[in-house]
Amino acid sequence: MAFLEQPTRRRILDLIHSNPGIKISRLCQEAAAGWGTVKYHLHLLEKSGLVVSRTKGRDCLLFAHDYPIAALEVVEALRQGRAGTLAREIARTPGANQKQLCERVRLTRKIIRRYVELLAQADLVSEQRDAQYQRYYPRPRLVEHLGPEPQAAPDEPEL
Image 1: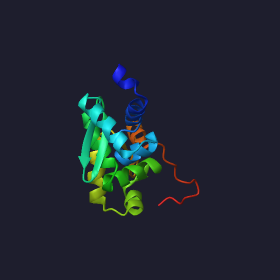
Image 2 (image 1 turned 90 degrees about the vertical axis):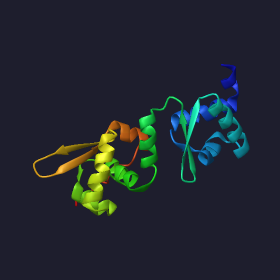
Image 3 (image 1 turned 30 degrees about the horizontal axis):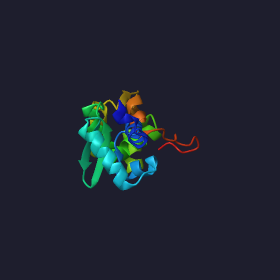
């Protein structure tokens, strides 16, 4: 497709594919292109149906046209707020129980439960019950959306 042979446009599309939900400002940095140039190519990519943009507050998030629609809401939720904070903590400390999560992210059990259910429905978190606790683990899809997160340090005390 000659349309995608233009190097800047191709780079922008590749960056959107590899970074679902990327913001325009970050896209400018990663593509090493000016705001006007990026906006011009985004306009053409959106017009051709290769890119979809979603506005969330002041931010414009960019996705490839074939990105699963259900995942758009997940990405938006993970990028900000309590669900994102909780998801990052579960990814950082796999196997944490509700009490530990409450202490680490400073949310109530009720709020933790609400967001864990949301994350589980999106197949981002799994729950496993052991003899005493319900434990939470990141699913591969969560790690894919968040990117690699450092694990808790081995000498970190268990709460």
